[in-house]
Image (tube, rainbow, N blue to C red; front, side, top):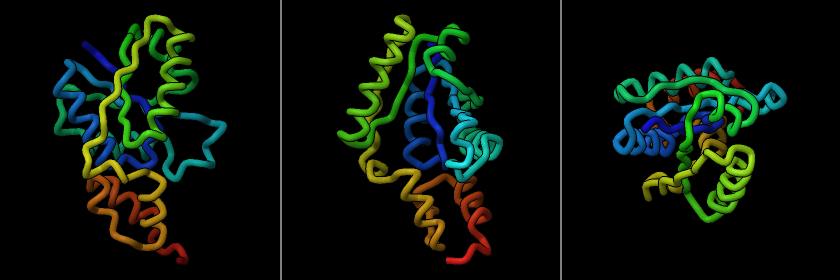
Length: 163
């Protein structure tokens, strides 16, 4: 079975990697689908090209994982690809509430789509992309929270920035 693991992944964290690795053990093929939203381009720290490169480098050890960008509605992306299963990671109850709404909406927009949830590993349940960016912005070591390609990209992004 081929599943889609969608998100903005800005940046890709060890929690994201954990979900991708676990999904790759459960399913034949996993597409990490990186959201490209031109309307929110200024909200992202990394461009779509940078995010794709970081995720590809971080998942290169997973032969059944591919990475691609998408834009627009996830339900439409799933329809165009002929895919039926979305995989999402959950860290906390707040994630569940949001993701439950999204799962219901996606199902309304595309009745063929099912959403499966993978609970975050306890050691990554507190890690969010927002918090990682904040730590990196102030020169903190994010190496334990993100894969090495993301740590290098974060360091390069904030190097020389006034703290």
